[in-house]
Amino acid sequence: MSQTQISLSETAARQIRTILDGQDARYLRVAVVGGGCSGFSYQFHLETDRAEDDLAIERDGATVLIDEMSVDFLKGSEIDYVDELIGAAFRIHNPNATAACGCGTSFSI
Image 1 (cartoon, rainbow, N blue to C red):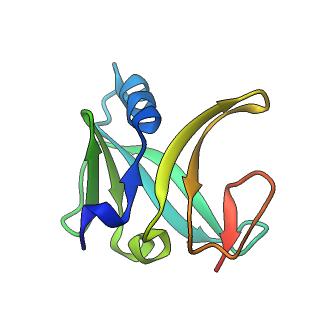
Image 2: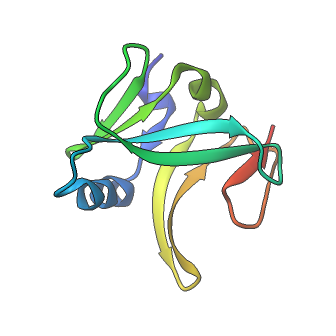
């Protein structure tokens, strides 16, 4: 699979580098899991190791890992970081989602 199918914004890469600075972790993992108010939800957590079948998306010194099963749900998506009045968070702009919850962390296909 080509890395161009899932992209990482400049602001997300900058925030990942900030979060990882001084941590033992080397990567941000993004996964899609069943559950949430719309059927699927995004999970974000820090990783020290990369699995052999992980897709690695790199930008400006930041690396995001996505497991093989989650890649299909995220094709064509952009991983972004937004800092708005209501809060700051990583956000997935997913063209495959047919509906999403108000908080932006769960979606349906």
